[in-house]
Length: 505
Image (cartoon, rainbow, N blue to C red; front, side, top):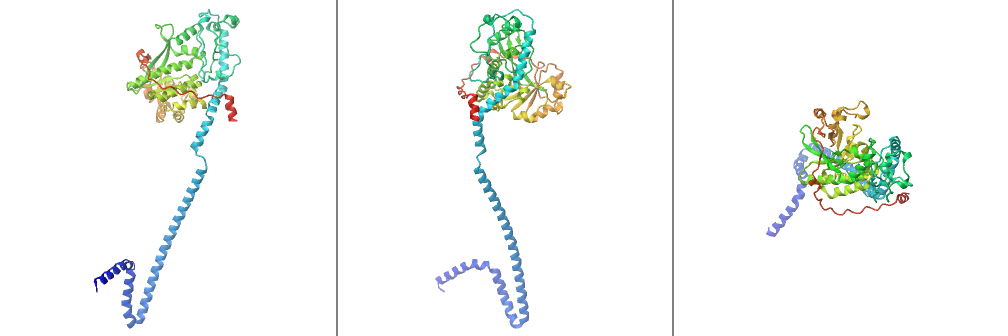
């Protein structure tokens, strides 16, 4: 055989090896059967027929078994394919439905853009309707008290009468001020309020009315305080318009370590000159409320609290600073928007916390929630001056409240009425709020003997004269020049309420 034929034979063998390897078993059985059955068929035909029949039966049984196995596999694969097809059909249907419907975030953004101004206007309107009865009753009570007062000699000349606060352009007025009045009259001077109604001099003898009408008495979400003698009102307003307003700080300490972790900014008014003792808010705050100056008080106090917070941040201190905002400032959108812009531009204000009474948090309307929303996450919120111990931890956490200030008297000596008590035990109040990320501060702790009782109630923080009295902030801290701030963006254009209603219809 020539070399070329040998190579061709080897190539053919290599080509047939994979084919023969696939049927090697059948070929082997066939060859063995031929070798065995061939001679047997010649010498023993009957036995060869029986052997051939048994082999055929065995081969048929194996074939049937294999066919049943393959059939079961095919049915299983068919079921899986059917399940997969149904899942694909469900996915395609859901995708088609989702593609046909508008995206929720797009629709929600468009809806918010359309009703933003309408929500604010209707929120203020609802506050007006809600507090109108309270305003009227407060005015009637003050008029009745003026009628019952004896005649007091005038202590201030009409020319020195405190001037009312002019209306701020572009800012929403309080509820009572938002109601239309046919003839707004200025706030009468102190000597006119002190005299009986039948002895009021003619209008021509009074001080000339200012060019800008004064604000009417705003609504009072808090209970009215005892009236101050009219002779002191002029001095209070003069001290407030001068340099009498001061900011004092009182520390908040941990229990039982008594480590200072926060400060509360308190307003004090020095009436009668630098040597006079500073007056408490209970003395001058009712007068400022009557003259509509509470928003100006909060604005000035927030400016100084901002300086103190920046000073603490520059020193690397993690101490928080809390200021109790007046409930009437919730009706001044300009103040809250200004605070939101300042907090957005200055990260150092993350340590500032504003506190509101429990009643104010419960009566928030849609407009006030929209004004507080930009502040959430930038500064802290606190609940102050509670009327009862019914705290809903989940609701407070949803509002962004991280601190609850409760008088120690309410925790240690609760009243007998069930209206002021919570559904949980007093010793579980602080731990329940702590699980929601809200810390409890016991305020007004004046007796050292109350400290162990507060520790037994698991109260983690406390504040009061038992630890430290309020002290004024040093003048050099407040004299620190503030950092240059970017020019705030212009206020959005406010459309008339009638045009908003027309567009809504």
